[in-house]
Image 1 (cartoon, rainbow, N blue to C red):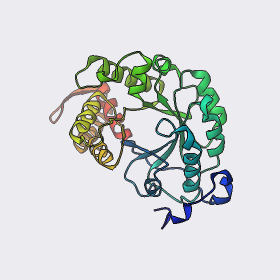
Image 2: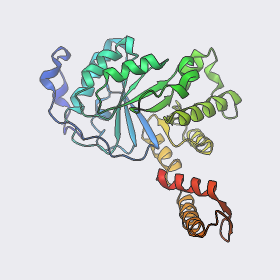
Image 3: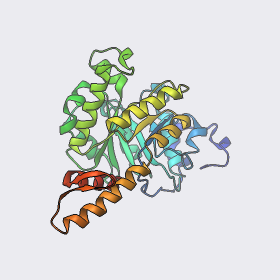
Image 4: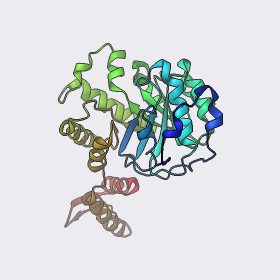
Length: 306
């Protein structure tokens, strides 16, 4: 926990923000896994107080649609307060701001000096807004985006105008609304949803952006959440948005290290390099059948990703 007790927070005047901030600044995250991205409401102080010990690979502190306009300033203050007393966290810490023209600019300016890892901007549409966000953002932080508009969906493969834009999060419910489609489409086997997932994945990978699949809202339906994770893993995803610890546990398991795949990749790398040294780039292997250079490159990719 960051604070032993939260009693001191009661009665704080949010109009006098700087007086209450600490001086600590978390070092940049060294987290290499991106299996789970847990959304956290910064009005929930008990949850906010535990961001230094949670199992989620990524934690997103949400200032956008879950926060009523009258409480956004309070939520922003809470984030600053807890981050300024945070020494370390195993999780990669992200702050999700409002759209740039709806308070996002001011939120980024306020947050820049605190210790966290990335800003995630809502409702991005085009390269101009990407450039604007990058101009506002401190250079030591990554830029993530919420892909929630039809404009961004169409342009995703062209949006990475700077290497600091690293990640896109699929907001499928807002995207469906932007497309004029009902949210009731979000079901297994729906071809429109599978098309959206496939295109999002391929366009993001084409641009060099890490794709994170959508949040499943039925928190207690862990069986269906697991089905979505397994389905998306088969599609090629490696990350899932999560609502809480139960979903984080499942996402971490499903998107975790596949030890059989690693064993296979190591074997292929060894035998291919031994054969290649003798000028043989295609051969039959007793354990895994025919191996050639494309299969070798896939094994290198698997080993690189771990």
